[in-house]
Image (cartoon, rainbow, N blue to C red; front, side, top):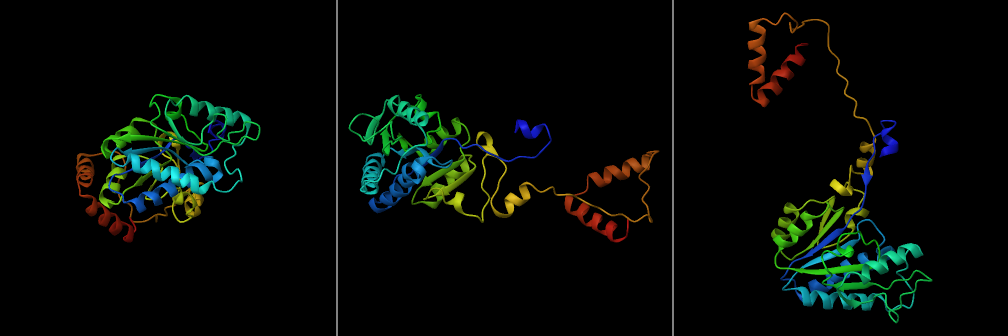
Length: 285
């Protein structure tokens, strides 16, 4: 943005951030299993969680916490049956950063981890999918973007508490809410801000070319994908042509009559101004 400013060049910024997942109470066992699969697959397996809209932490209703944790652990177990190491991170510096985030979270490691015997390997930059329950809210793991196969789980007493926590931080690039009530899910969307939002899934808004994608606040500005990307970098140039006859006297001196006429027009309802402008245009004024 600094480089573009030197040339007055327009930019759109997609800056990532901590994308939260909010899980409501009342989901059945099968619904929780589906939710867990969708959360874990993106958070830990798609490019090892190294994507801008990867779920960063989960705020789960306290009544559903235990069931969700079991579903998440089961999902990770089922997705790691292959011996292939699918969650390597980009380099050793990134591995060390993630290792530090996990070890300073002060939460309970439910699966994976960075200790000896977990499969973590600094040499190959492999970090197993790691889920940590109840991390310290002031730890770096809850303030820095993870961007790796880590997922933090925190219980909340209500959806309002979850919304308040999200709003207390920087505006996320993506927000995910899982609920079997469309009303409660839409209430979460209406009470929070984010670049994009999904109900009962993750990431799909990023891969859908028919909807705009972009950040908001600290997660960026502008939108792209399809026609939105074209419009983002296109100047909408307004051109108006006027005739040189039937002119309206709008020039100085501004007599009391002209002033009262302007005041009258300004106080007109918008729909009257709209049709008056159309009439004047048709008449050549």
